[in-house]
Length: 370
Ligand code: SF4
Image (spheres, rainbow, N blue to C red):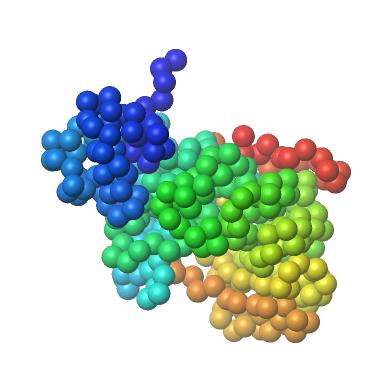
């Protein structure tokens, strides 16, 4: 089997230096390349400290990992989305850039598709193609930066895939986004649907990333139907792991809740969730981010009215839970996870959600993303 081709944002500084040396260039050239790609976050063909001929040679020696399949911008220009085709095997992944006056956030994919099978999610409906490698993840951020007039300040792992089911590559990508691209670890959010062993591993890492946990239901009976992983890691276990993370890292944890009309948006459900989270012992108390459902073709739920979301939020906050409502951005460009790819006809092989009884506490991690 031939060795994988090194990619522009897949190589570390040592490997980059070896590639540059292999081209017969002096050592300082590697420093110039690194400073251009990561320090200035400039595309290689615009690193003007390098001779034009060397830029062209390097572009061949270190190709990008992603080609643009589609790129769309919202009418207000604040949200841009890419559907990439990987050069490795042509699989498709999505990235979203969201600009605010004071920050710019890139939402990255950690996998092509997802095996978690959440029923309301366009990516989950399509199944898993494969894990992304660290270079493919880092390149999503860098390429979004190239299209962004302000400095990218935040990265959220909320695109396609369950990041904690692709732990090592995601870990390596976070390491490089923080160490090489200079993003604050606190501005990097890893969002999980509840991979309990992964949450515990993340708590032990050297950098204090932010953790977001997707709940979507106040009880296990409903969550089993929306988030199949709940059969392995029920809510109580997920909340325990999140509390451990908050205690170990000294960070507040955000709980995500997609509000789905007629499914999980009743007032009694808000009250039940509120009671549960008011008793959650994590640092800073529970903070819930409500996400009005972004409808997908494969799920019958629609978008909740703003009034309904407000009423739900009020009931949820009453026992002392902090509640925010996410403004859905880029609805006009299918900006929710997996939608652009689904519309383009992409998607992996559907994978059946896990069946059977819940694993006992302490059972091995799910290998759903493997
Ligand atoms: S919501 Fe997240 S974890 Fe669930 S299927 Fe979609 S991408 Fe996967």
